[in-house]
Image (cartoon, rainbow, N blue to C red):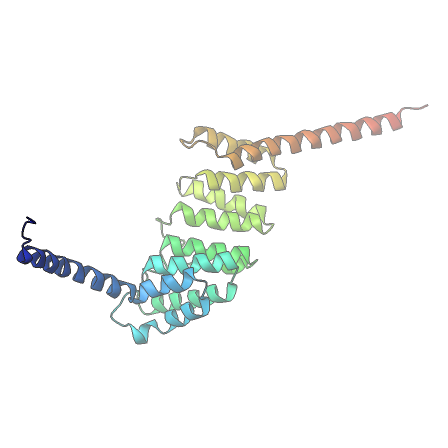
Amino acid sequence: MIPAISLSTNIAISTNLTVTSGPNVSQRHRNSNTPNSLLKSLAKSGKLDDALRLIESWPSKFPATEPDVEAYSVFLHACISRRSLEHGQRLYRQLLLHRNGGNLRLLNNPTLKSKLITLFSICGRVDDAFGVFEDGIDDEHVPGQVWVAMAIGCSRNGQPERALLLYCEMLCRFVQPGNFAFSAALKASVDLLNLRFGRSVHAQIVKSKEEPDQVGKVLVITIGIKFLFNATVTVYRGFRSLKTEIPG
């Protein structure tokens, strides 16, 4: 004989599943519709025009919602990937408007400042990058990542002197340099053929707790090879000059 199946038990289980699953789906739906989530989604999809329209209309459409640093960071990352200078400049104007309204949180955020500096630098706008960098530079708590972004930007745009000055000022302000700062300073030393400074940076690397990355190691070797080559050329030219002066 087939045993009887309790219908009431099945109904109870089905009811419990319905009650527990409903709110989770609803919560996920609400979260996906927040302006910050929408901004991140648009930026990741490469829809920068739509993302920027959302940013520029934010104060009037979402006055009760604070813009999220992470969402703005995702947008800037998309701008950097596409070298979209115009979108970055318009976002920067929005950050300035926030500052003028008394909200310094976004403009002074180190991640956003670093990404703006990087964007302007890779687009060849070093002076604009310096404008972002110098805004608030008197603050003693400017983190190393902002300094490094600016030093790399100078080095990338053929301004090694500026890169070395930034590196020196970092040390004067007791900002601990890391591998990116070391690499930028070493590259500038190579570009300027400044052996003394290259040795100084190498000494800082040795003293630091960080293990030099591959880029730093390559630059140390490169600066050594360059100076060895120049020394060889100098000796050779001196020998040729001496040989010419000896009477035949």
